[in-house]
Length: 405
Image (cartoon, rainbow, N blue to C red):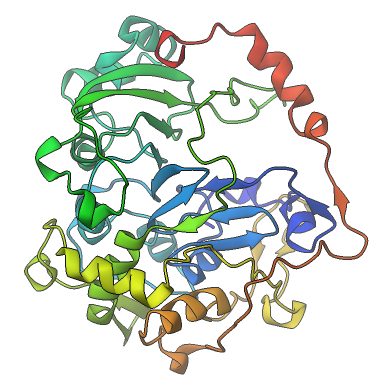
């Protein structure tokens, strides 16, 4: 994790990882710039980080209850965007810990291949067109340092603006800038790219372009421990209330077409993932319908994501961080966890007929099984009220932004 040493403190996630606590609702998320990047790298194409909490991957598209959800992890860095290398764990130096979560052109182009629309887009960054389509003066009042970047159209990720303009989501949820902010992004979605036969959607109406309701939330607590504007409930109609979390057939076809172009190599600073050039995979051009139909046949149209989370044995987690200088939050040194491939990632790639990430740098055992395992013995399911009670007090004090009404 890349963050100041004073923040390297054990939180509560380990209780969910080991099954002492279980999230009461399915929770999906993307990575930002202060994550356990070594663990998320193992789930390159998404997967369960614990029971009932699902990572959407470095980039990914999934379905839940009839809603098509696209996610893009990381933040924009102009110097790294076009680079063809991504660090691979173990992440030893600060440069690797930062570069690993910088969005690459390859990540964006893969999502640009998706047939619009999607219902929800989740990112950590803001798109560059968000700030000017909300209450900009209130934003400047609370974040005066943002004024220059907004005036230069430089606040946020320009490639997220391009992605939103293509995918046309109804909602775009983000965070990163430590302020709650709502905006209404006009004319999102490319109707010329809509193709029912390729996307698998039953109908693709002529609703594109359409406005996207954008919402960024604040971080959870301020330095004094007070709850900030970090929670808002948005009601979205579920077209298929019984649909479990499922893979998107078109996204799986994109993985199948592009994954064989990836290579892991050893470099002086450690292993790196080598990404293909846009010319090698057609850039942002969509796949043909036959590629998507082949995936439907391969999966027999059953795209349910298996509940195959298994915690790592403690012996494979690396040595615990030891505080230096006698403080509980002092600088820490630890032996990084070694490179390994997640059984979940291996299972998905094997199902697609693809080679898993190389086992030469770590374990690559496959995992099968599509049943949902019972909660671990001794697990304490959190009641919904326990999760939102304290947060909702603060959330209720803030007026619902017009863009989410």
